[in-house]
Length: 310
Ligand code: ZN
Image (cartoon, rainbow, N blue to C red; front, side, top):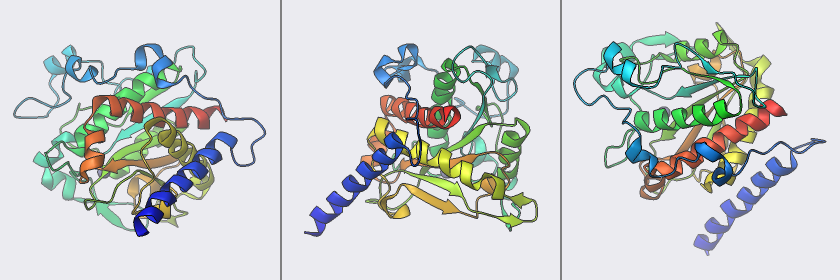
């Protein structure tokens, strides 16, 4: 009986969430919808993309930026925003924040120093989690962020990443917020995957609480960030089929926090998404799949597009 109940609840909530997004709370016009993943021409990279795509990981020794290395890669969007084409998001600026950094493991002293987040202090950055088999969260976030960049630039947005594997560690959480602020971003999404106990699974979106302390004042962005977060959650659910978290947010796929520097210090609409639980084998199977990550990128991007187009 308990099993049946547990199975039914997420389904009902998922349906509710989907309905919320499709109908839009109090909206007179339905949110615009991007083409389905299979229809979106070149953006549908799929699983085979893994083989074609160079690994974002430094193959050896140092992660410090190397001119020769970066020259052979895609141009770094963290130093030179690209996009700004002729699509529906022309003129819109999106900042994508890939959580953590693959090089953080090698820079513990740097990332462990504390930074002020308005209502307290936090570590500059953390290493993030990984699957039991060793696929790291930092690898995941960078891959999803790059896929999102492609999707959003196809819509005409100007897209900037807070880091693109082009720096040895970080940025610190306060700098991650400042990058979005300085870019005058219309929307910022910080991409993560969680490291909770096995059996805990599903995704959730983290919204900024109202924080007014020190350098933090989220009051002007609480409502807009919730709108962004609800749309991202709804589209992510729709495109990936990943269930809302069964361990955070009471099945709503939404959580509100006041302890994240990246949210506290933001002056532009911003949310985090925990795409799944890397320590759960079922979620890990999805998070390590290139085709699933493409869906994740598509879902988050569609939420952003919905938010930006109103
Ligand atoms: Zn994380």
